[in-house]
Image 1: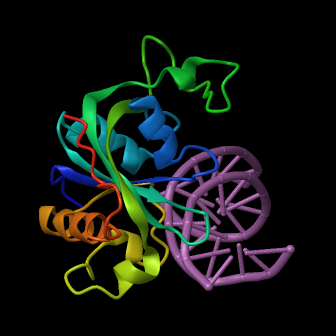
Image 2: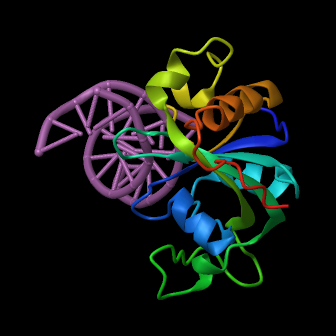
Length: 169
DNA sequence: GCCAACGTTGGC
DNA sequence: GCCAACGTTGGC
């Protein structure tokens, strides 16, 4: 898998949702404890990269909005915090194992672009999230895939409703 | 709640 | 270094 400047990031909405990100503006994406995902965060995430914010373990799962990377990879403090559920004794201040990035809110989709919908869309068949057994919580997507999903999510505005896209900047 | 798929751990 | 056991993820 190769870095593309565009990502899909999974979050359980019960834990942290796109609504929470809209409220907070930015968030530190802590708690990733998978080496492959860690390597992406550490090596490939760049400020400005586009993020599809994916809601997992919910009904229905799907892309709920957009974010962008606002701070590149740096040591994940939650790994060093004995009180944190993400604490990991392997990680030490002088030799941090886990990495976090900061992401900023960009847009909340007016309607979730569901996993079913992704699956049925031409041009998205290569999405890793559609692959069986793919559990990576941080996945590269292509620019083209990002744009397709973005269009689907932002194009669902109800007539007369408020614009779903409030650009962060 | 089930369970397939996957990653990690630890005995050997 | 192998691999069985175990824990987790996440759609269904």
